[in-house]
Structure formats: structure tokens, C-alpha cells
Image (cartoon, rainbow, N blue to C red; front, side):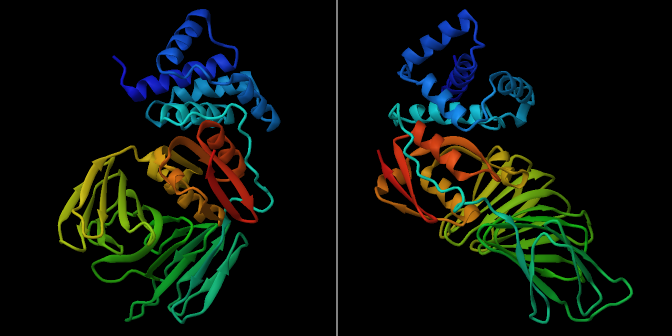
Length: 386
């Protein structure tokens, strides 16, 4: 017997195929039966297709070709959540809107978004050198030299540190890279460790690592690919605890307004040390450790893509509260949100968003599939209940 998520996935699958006119008679009967059983009979195929055609991106055969290819990717397929076609995103959000108990109005379409005012983030950062000098980094090629001879090379949204092996400085010199809201940047430290910095993030680190430990200090969110060095453990300090690794890839989220530190391991092994209780937790791939203020450390098994997808250009939301979704979008699109009806904060949605696409498409899908409506005033989005 199928569980709820499998049923949801099957309905989404069949509905998407039927919407493209590619379902056979047996599949159509199965879909109709499921829609009646789970009280989803009101799904509006015509309205959804009309929305796709308005966006001038709907090609049924091409969409289904992508559908079939991506569905065969095993663990990286997200039950219609990781698919790249906009058509798939519509189906996910519409079905999910009913699935989580908020029947949408068939006509919807009340999203008023000024695309020119709300653009996705882009590569931008500010690096603060050891002497306090601040340099704005963007896409342009730029070369900077620190006083210890370390060369900083900035190009195409990445900042690479190359240490000068012939020149050493007794005192450890620190740099800080700050990412504003609506920004992102990539960083390669002097030891070869690669770091992807998300919006509203700050990383403080030595220009050149010396001593027994490689220690950095994070506020915000970053994905790390640590250069393996068994003699020199890599430690990421957060507001609540520290993550110690030898060589691995993982994501840490530590935003002040969330009041929690979330570490998600993708490959390798890490140890999380609580700053409150000093409890030590070792993580294996596919697991996550979460620490909140005045709460015990929690370990849970997760799909890492929900927490690392942003690095690959996609936000993945699975049964996530609207308040949490919008908090993420506020950082990336540099927008503000006002809730005209606070009750909508707790509505849950499943879907994904291409990081570099307009926010209006995503909000339109949420409005189609949920009991919410959006209105934009400048760069402020007002959210109300339908």
C-alpha cells in the first residue's frame, strides 16, 4: 500500500502526463480514481496550461522529454520537485496546494509582481583585508596582494587565495568576506578548501593557515568542500557550536533570525561540538545535526538536496512553511515581506525555484496551488489569505 508521499508523487506524475496529452486510457482511469478518492477532482488542467502558454515556455513534447530523462536520475529526482521544466513546477505546486489542505480558487492569478523591481541575486561581496581596507568584489577580474604576500584573485564571482610560500608572518592575519542580501560569492582559501557563500553571509578566515588547526568563523550560510589534511583539522565556528572535519563536503546554516545552527553532511564525516553542552555528535552522509538555543542537539536523516540545492542554482522546498520559504527568498531577492493575515505563515508548500529566475513565476504557482494571494509594492511583497 502506498504511503501519503508515494500517493502524492503518483498523482503528480499522472496529472503531469495527462496535462501534456500523453497519458493512455488506463493511466487516465487511474488518475480519475485517485483524484476522486483524495478529493482532488477540481484540478484545472486548462487554467494551468493557459498559465504556461502566457509564459511562452510551454512545449509539451520537450517538457515530457525532460520529465522522462530527469525521472531516471535516481536519488537526484525529487518526486517532481527537482525537475527543471516550469510545467513540472506548476503540477507540483498545484497538487501540493490541495494535498496540504488548502483548496485553491480555480481562476487565481492575482500575483502582481514587477519583475524589473525584483531581480534574483548575483555575484557580489565585500572583502575586508587585514589592515581594515574594504574592497567591493563583483564579476570583474581583479588582483589584490596582502601584506604577507598572499595573492587574492577575483574573477567571475570567485575569490581565490594563493599563499606566498617564501614569505611568512608570525601573527595570523585575517580577512573577512561579507555577502549582502541579494548576493553570493565563491571562495577558495589558501589551503585549497572551496566555500560557496549564500546571501546575507559573513566568513572570517586566516589569509594563510598556520599552526595545527585550520579555523574559520561563519555567520549565515555556506557550503564547504574541505581540502583533506589529516594533520590539520578544519574547524568552522558558528554562533552555537563548531564543526570539525578532515576532508568532506557539507552545508552550514546559521542565520541570526532563525536562532538555530543546521549542519548537513553530503560526503565524508564531520563532528559537531555543541557550544552549550559540549556534546559531540559525529555525522555520516545524509544526516543533519540541528541545535537551537536552550535545546538538546538533534540528529536526523534528511535528503541533503533540500539543504544544498541552492549551491547548484535551485531552492528545494518540501512541505515547508510559507514563512520559512519567504525568509529564504527575502535574502536572495533582497525583498521585504508583510503578512496581512498572519495565519498564512503556517501554510505548507512543496516545490522548487530556479535561483536565477524571476520570483513572479514561483509566487504565481504558489497562489494557484494554495489559499494565499500576493501583492507587490516596490520591493515589498504583501501576503494575504484568499
